[in-house]
Figure 1: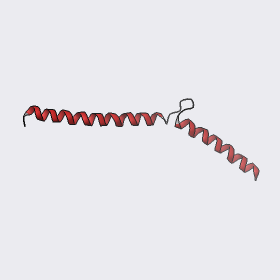
Figure 2: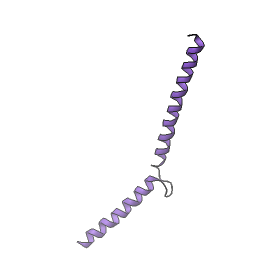
Figure 3: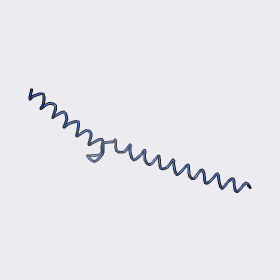
Figure 4: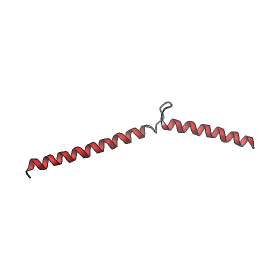
Amino acid sequence: MEFKDYATVAVAVMAIFSSFAGGIRWMVKHYLNELKPNAGSSLRDSVDRLEIQMDIVLKLLENKK
């Protein structure tokens, strides 16, 4: 094999690794964005609402006893 063949293989491998790394970066950024409150539609907002509702339910149950 000549130098240009090695260079071609190296560029192809780097392209594959960089696209894989870019995909991972996009996924991490997307999932971390769900953990920030954003006025109601994120996973974090849903968890906060559930915590408030559970506190209300627990207070009602304690008052019932």
